[in-house]
Amino acid sequence: MLIGGYMLVEIVGGLVSGSLALLADAAHMFTDAGAIALALFAMWMSTRPASVERTFGYHRTEILAALANALSLWLIAGWIFFEAYHRFSEPPEVQGPLMLIVGGIGLLVNIAVVFILHRSAEHSINVEAAFWHVVADLMGSVGVIVSGVLVTVFGWWIADPILSVLIGLLILASSWSLVQKVFQVLLQATPDRLDMYEVCSRLESTPGVTLIHDVHAWTVTSGYEVLTAHVLLDPALPGDQVDSVLRRLRRIASEDFEIRHITLQVEQSVDGCTEDHHVGHLEAVQRTGGRRLLPF
Figure 1: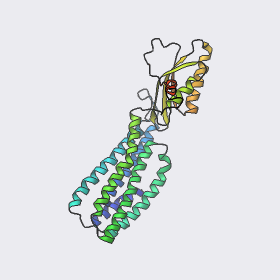
Figure 2: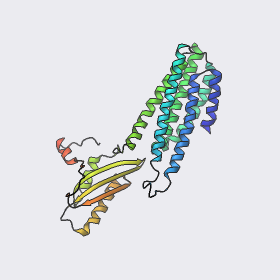
Figure 3: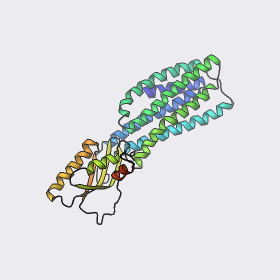
Figure 4: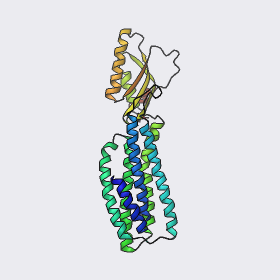
């Protein structure tokens, strides 16, 4: 309601004052509302149960929503650059005082919405995408105020397209880290917080375990990480102790590294095993003189 109501105020204010900065901020406000609605829809979808067709359920919907929101930020920045380009040659006359009033109200609205979203954004890429939409809009409101001051005090009408370009650049900069996070998830990259050398070292230190190989770790959605691995057991390990070793390995992965989904394949020989992806943490530590390498 806050965003929708203020968006209409900015549209009217932008048309009356002739300010591109206000219209750009209004367009961004529109996508803010869409971003939050999409984030809420994705959160609802992620609660739907898993099925035979979708064994991980709809958790990845949140990542797709975050990607859509991030790319929409880039489209907004492109539109701002396009409009500003045409205004540099013939800067239109704009009404600075009206820009100041509307921009000031917008700043207060955006601060309130940022405060509401901030805590949830720390735990969800999906909410973080909506959060950065609003942060970029907050920066836009600051740009509108600065532009309004320059127009009112000095009559610098060209300040309006210049500040609009700066708003566009800030939008691109603020969304870049978000886009990187989304693509990391979609490419099933190892989660940044996991040091796979340490994970494998802890698992291999378990009595009865000879080798951990074919290790894969990735993120389904925020807070939902997956680990799969082949576990080569000591051939001398009694059969009745295999389950105990597996429970210990799962406990290490879930409790010490907070991995939610763990799949371990037990082997007592590497014969016939075509998977040879081994983290090689022991060799890596030896090559670096005991220093741990950066996680990958």
